[in-house]
Figure 1 (cartoon, one colour):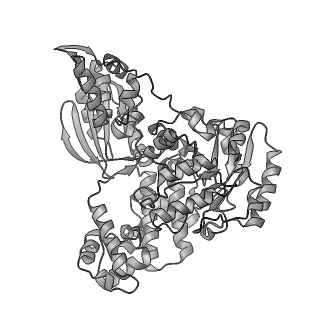
Figure 2 (cartoon, helix red, strand yellow; figure 1 turned 90 degrees about the vertical axis):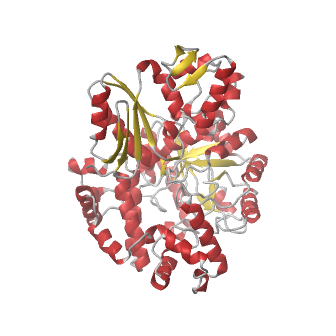
Length: 573
C-alpha cells in the first residue's frame, strides 16, 4: 500500500517529540523536524519519487541517514527507530508535549513521577490535584492543563485541508479508472474549502453502480468496510479517515451535489426559499408536487428559488442567500488574480533556498514580484538577521534585481513584535525596506487587553506594513492567542496597515470569519505563503480558498495589484 507524505512527516515529527522527551541532541531533534516539514511540503509523493529512482538525500535538509529512514517508512510502513523509542516511552507522550504549558521536559517529569502517558491520565491527575505538587508546575499550570484536556476530549478529530487533499485526490483518480465512471467529486466541507475536514463525501455518476461499489471498497488503503450497498458505501482508510461514496443518477447530480456540499445551515435557508415558492428541494431534485423540475445542475437548483449560482466557499449561511436575492454576491478572488507573494524566506534565516532560487520559482509561476521576508534577530532558532546582515541582504537583492526582467524582488523582513510593542529592528534599517511583515513569536499567554495593546503599539511604528499570521494559531497544535481582532482591524485601518492571510495549511490565519470581518471593515489583506521552500509557493491555493470563504474579492487583496499600485498602497500616509 502506498504511504502518503503526511504519514511519513507524522512519523518523523513523532520521533522528534519522543527524542526531545528523552533529552536527545537538539540538533538531531531539529533535523527530524525539518525533514518532516520538507516531506509534507513536497508537491510529489515520496513513494513515487523513490519508484522513479530519486535520491532523497538531494532534498533540502535530508541527508543520507534521513533518506534511508524515509525509504524504510515507504517500503515497510514503519520506522524501526520510532518503534524502539515508542516501546521505551509508551502512550501518547508526543501528543502531550504539544499541549500549551507542557512541552517535552514537563511531559518527561509527568511520566517519570506520576506515570502519565496519555490525555486521560493527564486529566485524571489534574482533577486529583497531583500535578500542582510537582516542582515547576503549581495551581495555575494545573488549571490550564485541566481546561485544555477538557477541550481536547470533546473535540471532533479533524484533519487539515492539505492532508485531506493528499488522501482525497488519489481516491478520485482511482475511481476514474473504474468501468462506466462519469462524474466524480468530493463534496462536503472539503468542497467548501474549510480549513479542517472531518471526513470525505464522494459523489459519482456512472453506468454500472455495482462495479463502482466493488471498485471503491477494493481501494488498497481501505482498512475497514463499514457498509456497502447498491448506491452507497462507507469505508475507513488506514489513516483513520472515513470516506462515504454515493452513486447518484445524472438527473439528480446537481441537486445531490448542492445537498451534500452543505452546509446544513445554508441548505435550510435555500429550502425555506423553496417552500415559499411552493417547491420542495432534496438530494434528488427540485419538485413541484411530484414533478421534478430541476436537479441536473446546481445552477438549475438555485435558479428555481430565484438565486444565481452560489460558490461552495460561501455556503455557510453567513448572508449569502440574502446577498443572492439582492444580486450582491461577491466576485470572489481566484488563484489567477494573484500577482505575487509578500512573505517568503530564504536560507539566510530558516528557509532552504537562496533568494535567487525563490525568485526564479516565483517567476516561473507567472508572478510579477516576490517579497523576501527573513526573520529578524530575536528569532535566534531561525538564525534571524540583525541590522548588519539585513543590510547585506538588501544589497544582494539590489544586485539580483538587475538580472531579472519583468520581475522584482521586494526587500522585506519578518520583524518580531517585542513584548512592549516595539519592533525588533531599528527604524533606520526598516526605512530601507519595501515592506515589513510583523509577527508575534513569543509571549503568547498575555491577557487579551495586553496582547491587543502590544500589536497596536507596534502598528504605531510608521514602518509597520502587514501583521503576519495575526492570531498565532497552529491548527490541531496551538490555540490562537487572546486578542481583540475587531480592535486590531480598526487600528490597522486608521494607520494604513494590513493583515495577512497566511496560506500555510497549518496556519490559515486569518480565519475565514476574520477575513469577512476585514472586508466589512475595509481592511485590505495580503495572501502570503510564508514559504520556506520553493515548493511552499504552491500553498497559495489554500490561502485563496480561505479568502474566498471570507467573501474577499481581488480588490480586497494587496497582492492582486500590479507592482506600481502595490507600492503606493504600502506607503504609510
